[in-house]
Structures are given as C-alpha cells and as structure tokens.
Length: 297
Image (tube, rainbow, N blue to C red; front, side, top):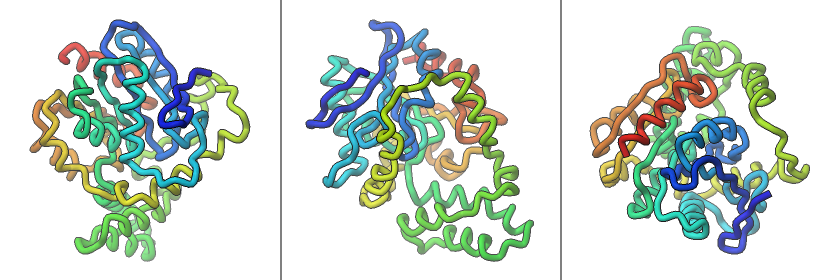
C-alpha cells in the first residue's frame, strides 16, 4: 500500500489518472469515512484529471490517532504537507460533506496552492448543518405526532443555541424509516450493492476498521469543528463549484444562498433526485459536472 509520512504519521493515499493533467485532491467526509467508497468515482475522474485520494490521519488505513489533539486546522496543515511531499505545484480540493469544510479552510489558508475548489454537499458550519437537518426532518415528526422529536428539532432551530449544542442535538435526531423516506435517505441495501459492485477489497488489517471512532471523538471535541466558516467563501478568488443534491440535509438553503450571494466566481449545480451521496446516486451526472468545471479552470 502507498503511504506518505506527514509530521511523523503514515498517511495512506492513492493516485489515478493522467500525470500532467489538472490535479484533484479528494477530501472525504464522515468525519471518518475514508476514501475507500470514492475509489470508483476517482477512477472515472482519473480519465480527465490526476486524482489524489487519501485516508485522513486517524482514519482506516492511515495511522490511528494518538494522544494529541486533532481538529480541522491539523488536517488542513497535513493536506498541504502532502501536496509538498508529492511535488504538486497546485491542485483542486474536492471536499465531500465534512471534507467540504476542510476544502474551504484549505483554500482560505493556502490560496496559492489551489487552482479552484469543489464542494460536494459540504458542511461549512456545524450550526447551519444541524439546522438544515432539523428543518428537513421537522415536518415528518409533526405529521407523525412525534412530540419528543418535534421538540428536539425546534430546540435546534432556536436562535440562541450554540453551534456545539445544536450539532450534538442533531446527532440525536431519530432517522427512522418514515424520516428516511421523507428525506430521501439512501436505502442501506442499495448502497451496499453499490459498494459490492464497484469497490474492491482494500485488504486492510482488522484493526483499521474501527479507527474512525477515535478520530470522530477527537474531531467532535475540537473547538474549530464548531466554527462558522461561511465568511471564508467571499475571500476565495479562484473558481468555486458547489454541487448539492436536491434533498441534501447537510448543505441547506441558508448555506446555498450564502454561497450564491458571497462566493466570487462561484457556481452552484443542484442534482435532481439526489440526496447527500451525489457521486453514488447520480454517478454519470456527477462526473460530467466536474469534468465540465475542469475545462473552465
């Protein structure tokens, strides 16, 4: 397996595609998901781009998290060290979900290291993601007469709630079958079929599979996870592309409108009939959108 050593930690990474093409670096979500489930899409995008995909420090095939603190800032700095170690002059961060937060912070912190930035159903603010989830699920709980969950959603939508409290409450939203249907959540069997059909066995040791637990705890304990990064959008001078599923509950209308109003050179594409996993639900459309954007950069 290919590894880079960054700040003394081993980071698992993969490369796809044409060496002299524009470089995409995929920043996975979760937090703690790994880049494994994106490998099929990375191969398809590799027909046009040079794609770099990796497991963030503390996730799956990369080294497990140690005793040190870990947050958004550390992951962003490690991403920049990877660029330097790979000898890449500049690249296009492509961040999904939590990876969208990393992509925005990276683009803001290292503007000379990017050619553009792509956000796929991003999480730019823990507070506004929590509110988007509450807004999406509240009508279903009200319809079903679920008083406890209705009250929970209304607490999340209270203007006086803190970012951390709102996010922690959002993690307690009951995503039952009715809610999943209402919010167009992907059926587990359908997703598992996709994984079986398109993703090869990573041949990873057993101890790799549980690493995301420690990683998530570190991220959720870090202060910078709960920061509002939406103001960063206006400072990114390079082209920005926002891809959002029609039914996505992570990047809600508030954030979409904020992007449209404040992102210079920003463009939004909403994928109909898709929710949070746009690259899985509409793979051909997703690939086409990114390839077309690449021609404009």
